[in-house]
Image 1 (tube, rainbow, N blue to C red):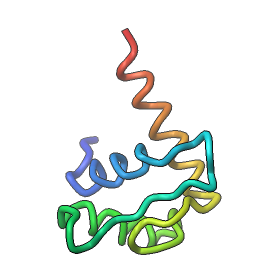
Image 2 (image 1 turned 30 degrees about the vertical axis):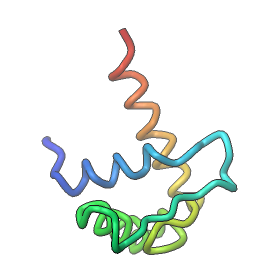
Image 3 (image 1 turned 90 degrees about the vertical axis):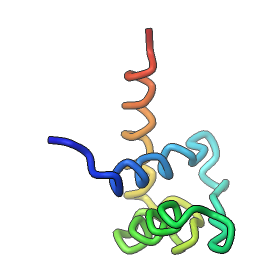
Length: 79
């Protein structure tokens, strides 16, 4: 099973959330951000993982997904 470019964009966006502070969100500036980042945020919002279509905060499900994504990246980047 391979990841699609869209899934990679979504994982990259989830990896940017600060898990140490759930009151810290992201803001995607739709006029300045790459179109794939804007689209990834919209997809995550439509799935109920983030609170706004331009970023916002992680929902409960989003927090769980971001934890998994960041854990995977930690394992892959370990020596």
